[in-house]
Length: 96
Image (cartoon, rainbow, N blue to C red):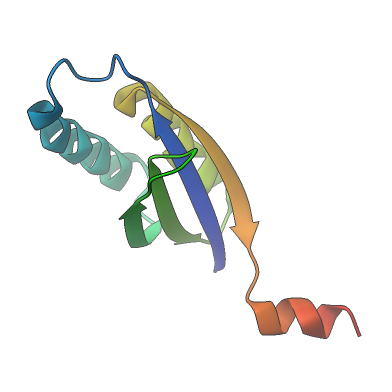
């Protein structure tokens, strides 16, 4: 399985009250579990920069990651940027 990073920026219009955000996050997670059963969610982080959320996932196909990112965009009212994450030692080994 390959590792991917999904960076999300939540729309200011996603919720009208910040207290509503946990419910929105639960809805998005449930939809991803339903539609992407083989995707393994490794970790999520809130960030204080250009993006609001950094998610680390593992998947056997890029299509499953694309589907999860589309669910985040649609149901989570966010924009996303997705990229593969290559372990540093594997990256260095590939350069030899």
